[in-house]
View 1 (cartoon, rainbow, N blue to C red):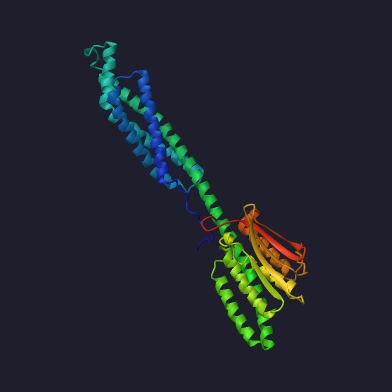
View 2: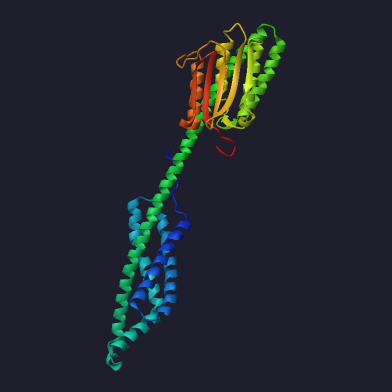
Length: 382
């Protein structure tokens, strides 16, 4: 039986990060030991430098081997990773100690012989115990060296686990950001699709009225305009931004559709500076506002009503205004349709821009106006 739980892949520390940490560790070791030898005035400094470089390379290779085994535990609980590090560092430390002993064997013998000569011991007096003493000294040296290397490798294991924890945290942040982006896109799609059915309902009612009154030519023009409107509006991703000129062109099509119903009462004015035509806005963000003006200004009026779509730059921000010279007020708590339209636009702006965008709507001298303030974005700057 398959589990319904989604298992996330274990986070991994990139190889080049691991390599840099290993090389950095052993390079630091190389420098510190070299400086120590200089300060203590040890003999054979030049010869030891090359041998020390070889032991450093061996340390790097052995530590990388330790990493290859340790990374098997990347997806395990922390206590298990710590236990693996404590155990796996032991054979790795012995390997580095043994490699050091092999590389420095001849040099160590020369150093020991030099010490004996300096102490003035006669060669014949040391013949009996020399082999036992050398064996005991070598064993002690190997144990001491392995112990020091063990803690050195444990220090690197601690660094690796810290890097792994950081990588897991970054991976969790990336997943959270992906989830937020997906939720934001879903919200924008939902809000966008709230617009289309409402508009379709209104246009079909208008078309039905034209057919019932025998205005077939007007109905045919309206059908063609509706077809063009939906072809253009549905071609765009509901979550994407569009240039302001495209958004205005869509509203022109919409107002042409409504002008068939109100040929003597609807007049449209567009005041869009060429410098702002390429500014990006959420697709169909103006449609509910224009629809409000038609429904609550043009429809109840007996005379001509002018609907104005204007844009301007104000303190580095894009301000879009949809206004009319009607007398119908649009209240937020009105459930007849226009309050919902304003809420839809406000929610879309908040979902897209957060606190960087705002909507202000209300009565103005001579009519009603809605102002949208949002950042000025263009292609490549979104």
